[in-house]
Length: 422
Image (cartoon, rainbow, N blue to C red; front, side, top):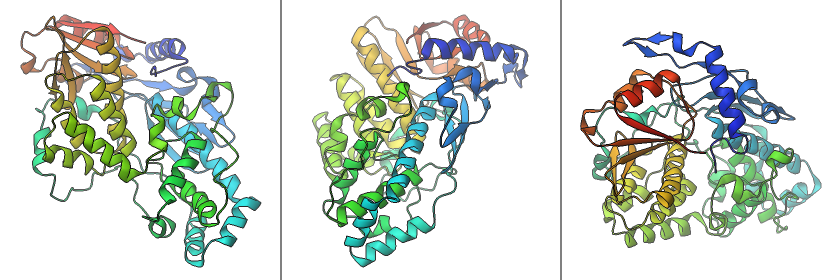
């Protein structure tokens, strides 16, 4: 999926125009670098994204040197979105929540609750009486991937068995008492929830806690009540631009909705074993609670598409150090772009710089794929581009987004070739 599709050309030109309007080239930061600009959402996003029956996007949208950060106010909480991809995903999820809330007020839901057993009824009431008012999001950055510090992915495997410290501001949902814990492990419920998620066109493993609670509340009423798993909608949509199938929207294979989480984990484990990945690394990947199963499965599939290529274990290691859902989504987008490039420019080896994967071509060029919105010449970007361990290797930046004029000039001046893709 193109980063700004189906509005990429319009959005890219709007991003550039908005940046120039805010004088981004005239705002130096310490070390003679740039300060990332602040954009106007109305000049960057398609008009139909800006507001809807249940949401509104705030006008001011600061960038962090990589992604433009938007805030969505909705009837179901406030969502901080890093990049346009997340904006689109959250709008879909807001629509899905609204559909679930509406369904839970209807006769079918009431009948399901009536027919289910008493304990889960109380669990449903716990959720209904205590809706989530807001969602905590991680800091607005994916700069973690461009860190100057050498990669420490190996340490994640060595420490896989140790308790993982909490990450400040993590998107990882804090699972609540009540329905979610009451139904955990009940045979058939996980499959039923996948069916509901497929109808809505959302990622069944989304980090959106309110969405998860509403899906589980509705699924339980239908499942425990012995009613058909039909909420009367095949995909949450609002206008022609959102009339996509679930698979087209979330970018995930249909099998995500067909097999349970435990079955998915087993399938992923076998796929990694077939690649020759060692058991400690496999355990670290499968055991990474900050890595949504849908993102894990998708990325393992992407690594498989890159072929039996030298160094692909380095790509697998990156799955062990995803700190939260947002990092996972960004890494997924990197892998997606690498797969697209591999189809036209074959890769023969893979490595890691910072926490960002890099690929070598038969001609000896190292490619770095960057699915970003707008790159400014910040100190962090400069440090990544000027890393000492690049040496004299020919380097190519494959960019799905825009560079500021300053960033473009500086990156090219130190020997990078820049390739823009749609």
